[in-house]
Length: 294
Image (cartoon, rainbow, N blue to C red; front, side, top):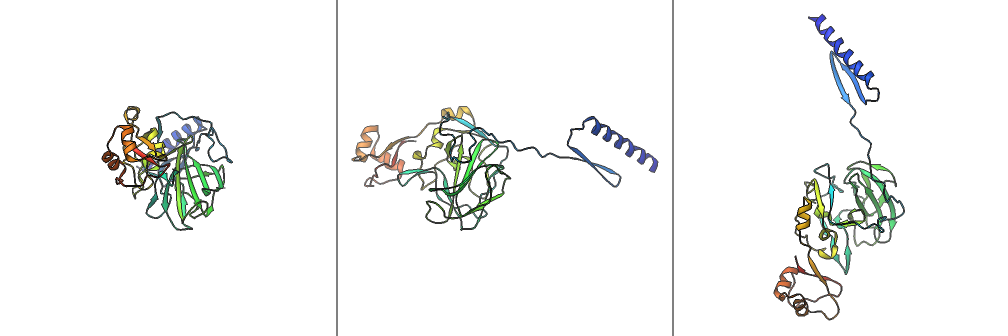
């Protein structure tokens, strides 16, 4: 019986050596454990990141590029790595804020907290900017870029490869910031997308779909309020994206009243108040958007 086992073992070993010599470039490795043959394959693959418009000195290298809508972003994973270890409390959302566009979300943290990369990728930009303070921008294999701003310290360098969940810096309050927080931006070829359209910022760390079609609505801060989460309906196909309706807005100008706006667009004042969660006597601030239709 022992002789039969030894013969069988030698036969298997001969087959393995034959396969290995027939494919010298194969990354397969072998190890012996007692009388068992264990086959191990190195599945690690070289990380590939699109190098088009790759610049380390420019925050947004896509300014000369015109992105057409809708466009699709695909994910291989169902989850992302949380950029912070704490519960993700959003203090300011993607949208219109203080008469200007807020192109990301603010997540509460304490100065010195670890800030992590949401996905594997390659660091494209590490610098200090007047508004963002110390910021790290990482480009990921699917073309998405994530930016981590107001850091107190950066721990990576430009052109460095990073892993999903790797610490890339320390949270802080640098730049134009009123208190320590992480300003998180998500962009694709120069288009800054509402992060909450792509990701759930709860403890599940879920990506909303494997393939997400982005329309102008989710790349236009003027269509959203930084004070409340927009109603999110994810487009998972080209047809859904084409059928989705883009919100209509009006930018408040000097002398505008709710009555003037209601007459201009053929809607009632009550409708405008309900749509924008305002009262009839609310002060309309010049430069602010007001929704006309969903």
